[in-house]
Each structure stands twice: as C-alpha cells, then as structure tokens.
Length: 142
Image 1 (cartoon, rainbow, N blue to C red):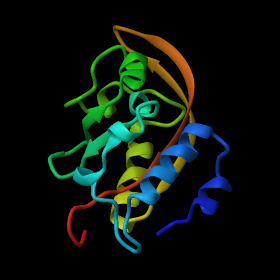
Image 2 (cartoon, one colour; image 1 turned 90 degrees about the vertical axis):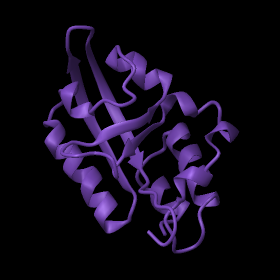
Image 3 (spheres, rainbow, N blue to C red; image 1 turned 120 degrees about the vertical axis):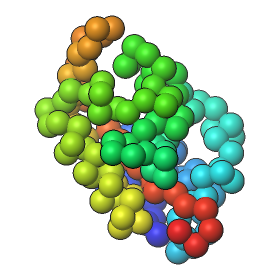
C-alpha cells in the first residue's frame, strides 16, 4: 500500500492529507481499505468533502454511493445515486477522469488528480480547481 510520504510529494492540501492518513491508518498492510468498516464519522470535518463511487452497482458510468454536502452544493443537487458523468464539464471530459478512476480500481492503487472544472447545468455555472485523491476499497480479499 502507498505511504503518506508518497502522497505528501503530490499535494500539500491539508484535507487531502488528513483523509489519506485516515484511510491508511484504517487499512491493513497490503490490503485495500474495507469501506463498510471505515467510520467516516470519526473525521466529521472531512465528510462534507468526500464522495464514494459505487463500482459494484454501476452499469456503464460510475454512480455515486455517498456524496458530502460541499460536493452536492458545488453540483447544485444531491449527487447520491447519480452519475457524475451527467453533470460534469471540465478541461477534459469526464470520460478521461472516469478512466483514471477505473484504472485506480483495476490496479488496486490510489490515484491523484488536479484539474480545472467548469460545471454548467440548469442549476449552476461554476469554475473550480478540483484536487482529488481516490482510494479503491474492497471487502474481503479484494
């Protein structure tokens, strides 16, 4: 599994580093984190910034299993149960971002992205720099 020093080389964002430390400290060595056993309520200041993708129940495009209120606010809608693909516009298409997420899942390794986003739909028209760290999770041997 990746070490916190590896993540520090990528980002100095306090919340990303705090989240990474939480995940790494709640994971067994050489195993993927077990999402059902993670107690996100022990990091209440980070929960509004977290989203969880439902890989197992996503058919074609990745579906959101849980989405924090800060992310919902950015999209202008509760994203739980929705596909980010339908709401995303950035420097690249969401196909590019989703491919990074899927590679992370297949490789069973964390991924990091930093990208410009232009979110435009019937609810919002916003620009933002998004910095994301993703940890694939699996129950059991995964």
